[in-house]
Length: 356
Image 1 (cartoon, rainbow, N blue to C red):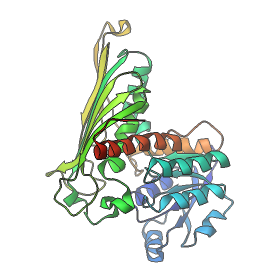
Image 2 (image 1 turned 120 degrees about the vertical axis):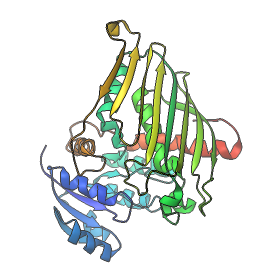
Image 3 (image 1 turned 135 degrees about the vertical axis):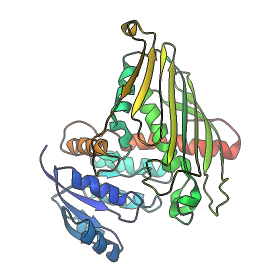
Image 4 (image 1 turned 30 degrees about the vertical axis):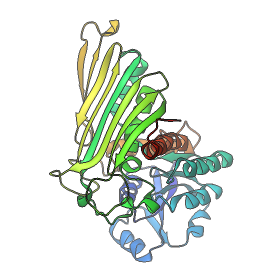
C-alpha cells in the first residue's frame, strides 16, 4: 500500500474527531486537509489536533479540486450530507462516510448510484465488521457450525436521551431522519446480515418516544424481522440506561446481547461496548471433541475510532481505493440497512408488516 492524501469533511459531527484520530493513526495517510463551514472550528482543530493536517478551509471547492487527495472521510449532519457526498464523488474522489449516508434509503441510493457511475469507491463506517469476534462469528456460520439459521435475537440499549443533549440534531426528525434505529440500531442490522449472510426481507415494528424529553424521533424500538431463508429475528433498541454515564464515546454506556441460533448450535455474546468474548456451541461432527467453546479477545490500544479494528477498517478502504479488493462495508450495504430502517418506520406508522 502506498501513501495517500486524504480530506476530512465536517468537524461538528459527534464522530468527526474520532475519524480524524483514525486518519492520523493509519501510517499510509501522509496528510489531511480539513473542510468545515465554521472557520473557528477549523482553527481550533488545527491547534489541538494538528498531526498530519496540512491545511484547513471553509471552501469545499478548494478541497475537491486537490488532485493529490485520493479519498475523503465525511461526517456530516444527515440532511446536509448527500449533496456534498455527490459533489465529492463527481470530483473524482473516493469517499467513505459516517452512517447512514442519507436520511432515507432513497437518498442513500442516490449517492451510491453516483459512485457506481463515476467508478469511485463508496464506503460507510460499519466498522464493527472489522472486529475479530464478528469476523470469527461470520466464519463459524460459513463453516456450517450452527447449521441452517433458525432465529436471531438482538438487544442494544444505551444511555438515556437526557444524557445525550436532547437539543442535538440527532433528536430532530427533519435533520436526522430518525432516532435510535438510524443512529445506533443500524449497526446491529448491518452486523447480523453480515454475519449470517442472510437478507432481512420483511419487518414488523413498533417505535415510540418515551424519554419525556422534547424530541421528535423514536428513542425505543422493537422489530420483528423475517429473513430470506425463512428464519426469524428480533431487535430491541433504545436509549434507556440510567446509571451508565453519559457522552457519545462512553464504552460503559451500552448493554448488548446477540444470539444467532441454528439447527446445529448457536453463537452468542453479551457486552457493554466492544464484545471481548463469544460463546459457541455446535453439534457439528467437526466439533464433537469439544462442542461448547468460548473465544476471548484482547484488543491493542489505539486512538482510532473504535480502536485497532478502526484502523483495519480504514486501511481496507484505502486498499480498495488503490485497486486492491473491496471496502469492508460499501454504499450498497448502507442502502440495504436503510431499507430495513425505513421499513420499520413504515410498519410502525401503518401497523402492517412491510416487505422489502
